Image (cartoon, rainbow, N blue to C red; front, side):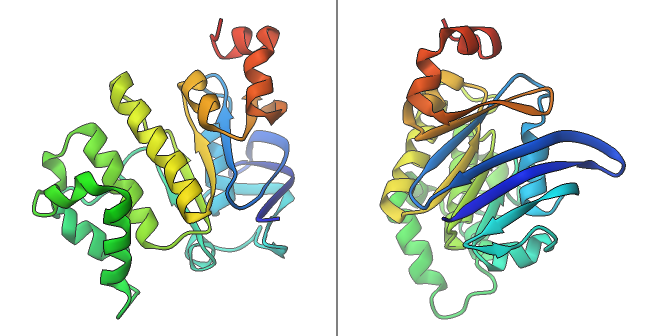
Length: 235
């Protein structure tokens, strides 16, 4: 098992935002984390990465207890987190962003960048552009590329399609699914467009008010009209 989360309760300081969250993820699986605004989805992602206070529970990565590890220690083990905002260096070019993403690598860095550009070919034409000049979709593609340069085993994406046009959002989520299949990584995806996310995910975790109300196959959640219409607006 790539990741196991056991009865995780977390928040910020003394404030508890999520309670008793449990799920598991294998390599090459995509888990969609869904729910209304304020349900604790981003807090869960931060807790997994060591950026929130964990009050109770465990996080196991490939069988190792990584609950108390710092973010850089988790990153070294192959867990890569892409936040919703501030996920690229705006004043650097696309090329410089990719180099920064792999600054700890040496001889293999350019080989990694070449591999990533083969997965995300539109970036090849943007290498000299400053990140602040990119469109929203191009910027999210760059953030994804920077994460892939680090050669993750687990990729955590917090709303990569926020504020994007529907067609661009679909392209980004399709790229994420393609990366999962081609690189064999496990992916946890927080996404507001539930129908789009579920159509490309293997599993789904639905959160409401800091608690999980559904965990199972993504296609089954789509068929559960009582839940999907109430919490996700899918009819």
